[in-house]
Length: 574
Length: 63
Image (cartoon, rainbow over all chains, first blue to last red; front, side, top):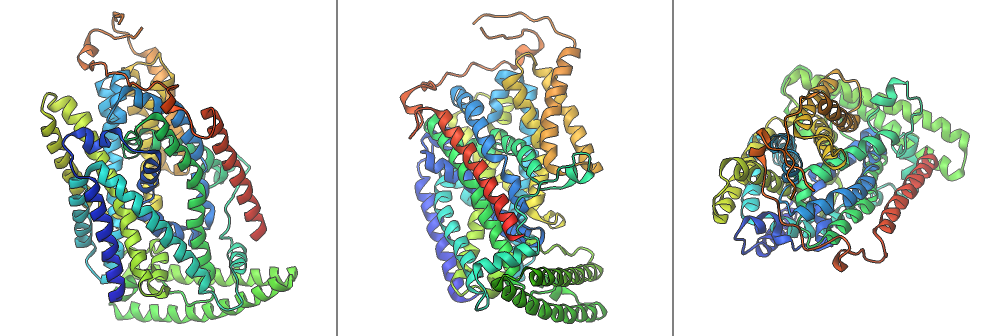
């Protein structure tokens, strides 16, 4: 990076963090630390919700996902708007009515302490691990660019964030997320513009879409119809898995994950919470579509520009074995030769598209796809060689595709801004997660079961210590995140392992009044074991686990309520 | 009427939390722009359906 880029990046950080610290001054109790005294307007709720969900993974990994697998990933968000409506109707009024700090407090009112503690534990487990991945995502950028050791980079990145979150609390998180989101949207729009701007002369935006589309990258809607076909259930991103599995995942995430519940609990009224959530339902799908579109356009861009054999160039440079290095050079030569052919065929295709010659277009498309297959094979061979040279190497370069474009093709100054965006997106999301991990630990475990009668000042101090503890925990998890492949997928797989069960407990609480605490508790334990088994057997795609987990918990809850011996109960009229 | 069980589960009872001062139909909780929240829900579903349709046309147009 140039000096100008470093200046732009540091200046952006300084403005954002100063603003957050300025806005968060004067916190004296847990109410202000976790809920900002319930004073937030709807637009801050909206920014906070989007900022919490859209981590660095979203901006790093999503364009790479579209580049490799096409835009069908957007279907994963189709269930989200429907989930927003259900949360507005069922969850928001209840949480506001009970004046809870965390979603799990409600479960003790409805069931018992053990069910509340189990749900809080499941949340802490999955959110702690997901946040570790969120720390790793921006850390790979720094390590890749500066050649730093990834383990030390994780510690540096996470450590900086911990100080900011421990001091700032919820208010700092929300106010900085507002500014961050404006800068993020502006930066991503500029990056998208630059991809199109850098296409060869005579190749328009529409041509780039045609090139991406003819290579199968604009597969936004995929609708398998045969339910008996194995691929119907195993295909990760289809209209059906997005609508059904995505609905359950979004309902769990926004309705029961404290990192999101904590955002809209800070609203000054039910209306403000609802408006924040509903507007999120309106903007999320188009926003994700546009981010993925950048990836599809990048694919078209790299038909004209020489792409590296691996987008993680540092990994290529690390190979020291002379024999393997020689083989990699051989592969690179063949790759460059095929890339040259692709360039020529793509230009021919554009000319044929302009003439409207459908037969020739089909022929060029076939040639282009053949060449694409050859380059894909060479990239796979390169990965095998890299792995041979260093068995611990991260050969999945999906997360580096957008980054590679930023470094090599964007003008000075804009690179710094894009890097700042990736860091800010990460920090916004991680700060909210650390805040929620701390609030759940303090409110649902420490204050409830360990030290119930301490002063407000004590709990505020404990909250800051817990933020520190979870920050350290997440850094440790980040040290192992390089084994997980596409980070955006890893975060969602991890969530799907637990969300279904957590959602099932809340569904029983809301809609199955006859089921009591013991039945709900054992239903959750059994379901979680089954979900982990299904995942290990690889029977269905991970999105379905959310729906299966929720429905199984409800079913088992009903069965256990019927089977478990009833204790003598005395009804007290209030 | 609210049910509380006595026995093993009695230990886990929590004090009843004070209800909020804002009922659902309070003026500060009425939706903006529309008279009822239902209209907002229909809008969100309608936009989703429209987006799916547009994406479908987009996929077919460039395939």
